[in-house]
Length: 212
Image (tube, helix red, strand yellow):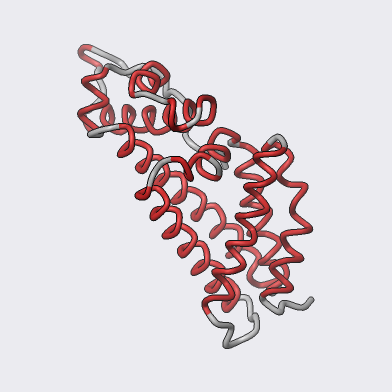
């Protein structure tokens, strides 16, 4: 699974022009991807709207038709990335559910790491640079972690994991995973994130009392 490309192919003009809704969605997708790319390369604090529109290949007027400012665009990109990630992980754990809790933990974690490795700009922007994007971004990150914890709890129950595990255990598990993955992205190439699969699965199985 890959996130949106940095720029969609040009849409047709004139008699064969795409419907307005298609144009709107294409522009928005290009802006969200551009935001992730330029923040990953320059850092959130130094990125300006002009950087985003140059990367997306749209006008300043188009940017402000979609977003009020840089922060709003960043938050929208963050939300879109999290939604894509949750969908990808959900697909993986549902496919592994019949094989039990350990298989679910491994499949979901592998999909998470593989998706980040395939999208290094997304990985750096939304694991590292989110901390520089202000209080609203940090609140979004906290909500995202809650959603990941809820997905982890649901998948553990569906796979026949231990009953009665408190919700805070799942939240702690997500926090531990996020800490190690973020450190890895900061210190090494995001492409090597799959190297963390065994350590992260070990953390999950220890915290969630999962046994083969």
